[in-house]
Length: 158
Image (cartoon, rainbow, N blue to C red; front, top):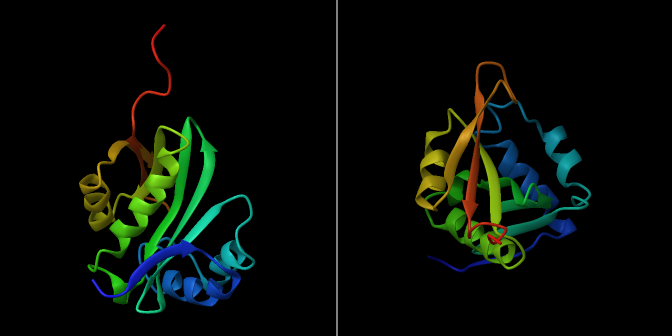
């Protein structure tokens, strides 16, 4: 892999993050627009952990995490620019998030669109279990599949 690194998202990353998300699926299929992404990322998301992956000095990926979701954290978004796919950026970004999350809690949850087979395969390869579908959650006729990766039960038996 070329020169890549993960870091906390900064305000000056907003334009590149919005561009990479607005130009790629599944978000185009789900109807997200540049205006939606600007509302989410500009200014930086409050109450969320946000990270970017850089590849050769360009923003190549983004992750957004909400802490304290159910008995874990929730990966609200993981996106990789079309030009940076199949270069290990998604795995690198996800491993970074998981390392931080599993230091504080036992579960990381995510969702993936049922029509996004590549993402479903990616998460399965990373050790995520499909918990179940949420039909008609974002768009009619499609489901979001709820996912979970765990480091073990949150409680010990008495």
